[in-house]
Length: 78
Image (tube, rainbow, N blue to C red; front, side, top):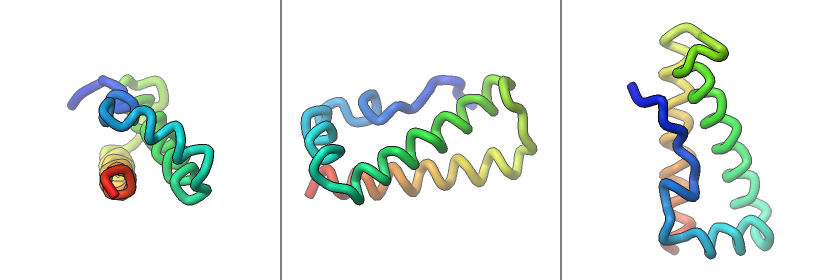
């Protein structure tokens, strides 16, 4: 288990400019990025025991974060 936050800018540094542009011009991308940020924050807070939760709930959040990250990546590389 890693306690490192998985921020989008750190995950996809090569797409930093494109992410910034898409957040402003594409409502769907902006919503995905906002949702990713919220889920990522929840996972990080659970991992660091700031807001502990049951393992199953934490695992579900990790799966949701991974699915969002995949969808975001597909939009970025398009």
